Length: 550
Length: 79
Image (cartoon, rainbow over all chains, first blue to last red; front, side, top):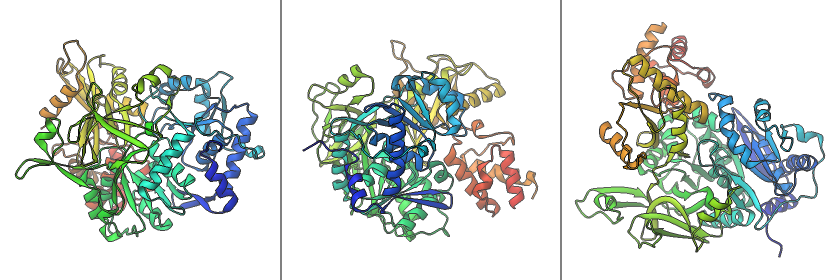
């Protein structure tokens, strides 16, 4: 039997039911629906365009496109041509495009794409960055002048299907290489774990450059006979009710959201805007710490829309396993574990005794089929149930390595093929709870950032010196996510000078990353805690910041 | 409503949304001038302003708002 390809199911659907809708693109008040056939026609024109441009099987095609049909058709077209698509975010209107593309420069140089497909507003700057004639640039519309490619050259099996750059802040992002086999193994296991059925619709505002958006909300319905109602992330933030409208309009069964979105939806619910959400089998909380209060507030604010606790589930996922590592089963509320607070502080996840101070954590479920999970200590020794340690995974849906980083890729797996996730957790009765992560990782609204990248941005601001700034992720119960706090030492005492420095720090982060809302915490020289070897101790700085803020 | 009246009401709104009871607003301020003013907080500000003044600020009106002064102008026009 020939190895299976990500496009096999799509091709079959084209034979059996070409007019079946796949994509409902929601923009403002309009919805454009694309059938499988329409999608395939446009995609196969992209495929012909790429082949005619000289793109070879295995070549990377970088896609930097706004929410719209070309994002989906260019991605599928790249797969059809046997190329390896990689979707990257575009600069937001608040970002300085020059700074943004400068930050992407290192990444683009490493990727060495055969083609970049982007919107006209990015073309000039991108062209300036990748002047080598080896990288073509194409805009939506360029595919309309060529006939469709009828003989697809799609990869299969161990061939790399796509690159994911979810984590990281700037050009230091690593490209997670995912094979057709790994992706198909994940989709089979995940569909089974949640009970995804042919005909199911997904409602989503998640960007496709994020693994949850790409895998759960595009590839899963594509391969498992479903459909997706897709919203623009920026539109949704400003008008969160769009999601409920889309769920009701398309009788969506599935919706994946980072934890902060549950709070945002609860907080922005207008009583007069009521939509029927009873079609949903599960709202799945994933991409950042799942907080019980956030689910509770969401459920309470939408009880009159048919939302029940049994619809609220949790998932623990990462690009390195394609998507889901664990998932709670739909149909019953995601389990909550009342654990001894003192025990957790001592590295033990044990039920709280009567009268004992307890911490309630949501279970993120059990491993999906084909994936093995274990908890290990710093030396790689396996820890038993109830002990907090690093989560390690192994299985068919693991990544093939990081793109153009062969040494790091080999080093990522231990001798028995286990991958260390960097997250801390414990198994309690077979359920996984996540208790923390490496301190150099900050997860903001579901986006994984590296503290070092943010500190590098801070160092560029006049008045901030290397070693004199630290980036911290501070949990914010009100937002259901974390706040990015940049602590910078400064001798400045004049209020106007301090305000200007704070403004400069916030603006620098936004210009490079597009992230607004940075908390610029100025402290006197000598405030930051360092280890004896002179390195910044993130854990101690976080503790000091929190102690002083209390 | 005058923009001065709008600014007074917005001061209450910002103080509540940012949990800063002593905050004094500068109409020239935009998102980069306050800790924690991200896109989600922005939506919370709009909703709180609507509730405070009993108005609706449609998405098209709030999309281009850059400064607090802009917001005060929009509120004064809608109230």
